[in-house]
Image (tube, rainbow, N blue to C red; front, side, top):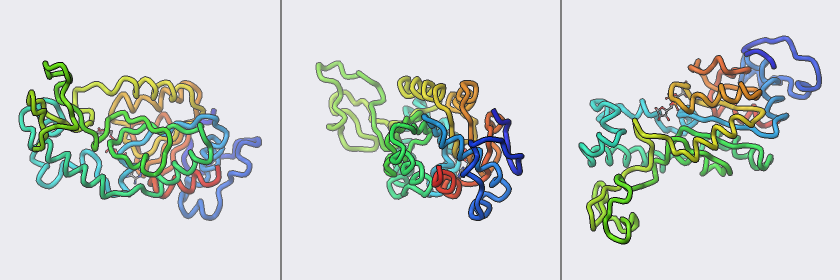
Length: 281
Ligand code: APR
């Protein structure tokens, strides 16, 4: 198992790196990291199962602000908990609904970037070998045609009831018949419709988290793209994969809190690095 490498490395012996040597183009894209590229390419090419953990940086080149960047302008005067918690929603449903409506409009206007496209293209040409575990609440991986996406933090375009099962009536609240408004309500019991995202203090969707931990523990290569590694349990998936014997490759223009888990660190953006990294694996 190679130690973390960034910049010029002595070539590992054997077939593994042959054919993945850095090209002139690689040096244009990766600079000094071009030397570590063969390790990353060989790890992905040789993996029967590749898990890709993505964070907000994956959508940066599609113009989608990170959660923290979205707290700017008119929204900068609010504490994140006022805008992304059950308590904040109950206190001011209209404010929270408007914030998510504005962010949701941004997602609808955005398009998958070259990084999303490169991942989806690789998954199509290597069926059954790639699973994307995303912390993002947009749908850009799906719109790029990525076949297997696990959403850990929900779906900003999704809707669900604030109080599950609140209706005492025989038939539960019918979200398709919610009374229009901001936010919509159940016409019978007044239950509020909320955005389908995970809020502060809420558990992650158990099925998605269980499967994310299962695939991370069973993969041979993990590609970590555009996450600061600041939020758990998602941040723990890279260490889980490494302990299980996977080669971990981090793609991020800056250092992250989980860089120590990486065997290979590629300093660059998703839309720059992923097409070059995946095109020849
Ligand atoms: N390509 C790749 N990475 C990028 C790019 C890019 N173009 N631009 C920025 N980054 C990196 C940043 O360097 C940073 O490390 O993306 C990361 C974004 O970090 P965060 O904003 O903390 O986003 P994320 O790691 O996804 O946060 C996890 O925290 O904000 C909450 O629930 C929210 O899902 C989010 C979670």
